[in-house]
Length: 336
Image (cartoon, rainbow, N blue to C red; front, top):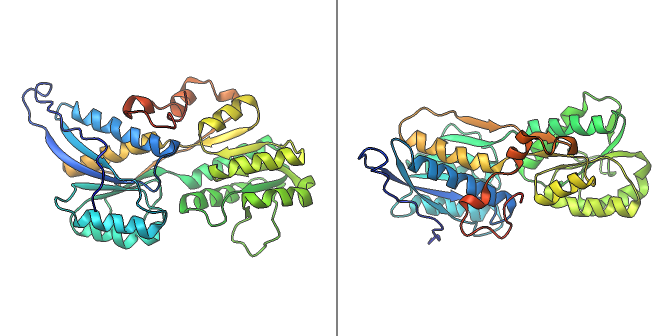
């Protein structure tokens, strides 16, 4: 399979390194989505690491090949992983964001067993064969969301959880963390859609309007776990004339604007930019013989409008995406 090469940094830093010859490595990146703010930030973070390693005292030149998914399902992504392992020349390492970790397990472990180190990002995959995992602690982010929303609700009332009942592993972990976090607030209870056989009380965006019509009086707060569910949830709340604290998991520019304008009470933000940066660093370190952590997790941050302009929060929310992506992505990064 021929994959388009978006960036090739095979620059000679010999002069800066006192005459040392840089080793060239070829890293192939298989994200779970093509484009979008999160994917752009992940990509830019990887390019930051590429630049930093190239300028290091002992330089490492990295050819970074970003290969957007050929299809929208896990099977297509698994096929891409297998094709990378069979390619000639073979990449020195793979960075994979699994769409479904269990469906990608065989392909990823087979690639690792063939001698190509694999770093898994964003969605955890427990396997002794991978080099490392780098990503957010989604369960912790869910707990942070519970603490934030319950306090905004004055620790009382019903909370409506809106997401995708058949969500990705990462979102499902976030939802589980949120439910666990509610145990610390006995006077806050989830509002069920009526499907009491569901594993978690998570409702689809298209069901929100009907639930608010039937049970709106019980809803004292709303959590949106899937960023793509925000627009439908916001519209349903407006149509119902219901003004309750709304917390969204994600840090898209639209969410930041809504937080500043008071349309959202809080967000739980994660940082794909730093995930991308660390993933490349970890893979390069492992290939140089350094010992690396098997699990590298980055904590999410709960943010309200009062904290939005704090320097540390701005640094977290405003990674320099445009500085590293050239030409700039259509999305323009996370924030302007």
